[in-house]
Image (cartoon, rainbow, N blue to C red; front, side):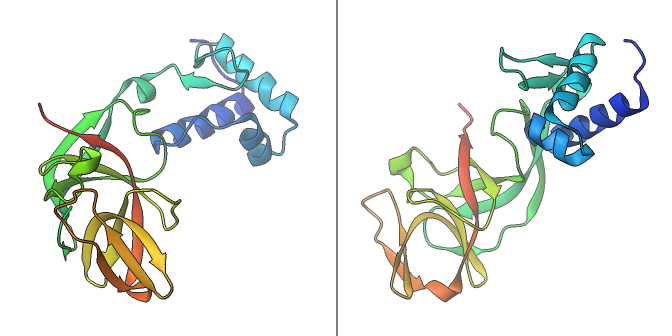
Length: 199
């Protein structure tokens, strides 16, 4: 590869840092805002990085790039948390010594936690006992999201519905009943973004 100018190196380091944290490749807008560039200047530096072999275009979209080095080629490793109940809430999970690797783009960007599922209350969504739930850590949610939630010192995997000052924990397996708790006792840990299963 060719050498980079100081500003090209800075732009490259910025994109590399984002990707190493599991985030999407920075947009032209994001790069321009970070460095105080105009969009045309950000595009110029990306094109220079592409020409020198440090990044490559994933599609015909102007700013849809990938790193061309080992950061993108190396799978992302997830350390597995003990378990999250898909049934009756249980004590908060801890990390185990288990880990596994998948393609870095497979579950999208953000802070993602891998958690072993215990129980069958979400089997209607093809989430079975022993599966690994991939949870994107966040405090907000949209209607219909399957969420990891904390109820005081317990956690569980459910859809939720607010009813006044109460919150319903809704299973997808009809053999399990809806549980209702005070909304003030519930904290959203994150939302389900994928399921890993051994076959």
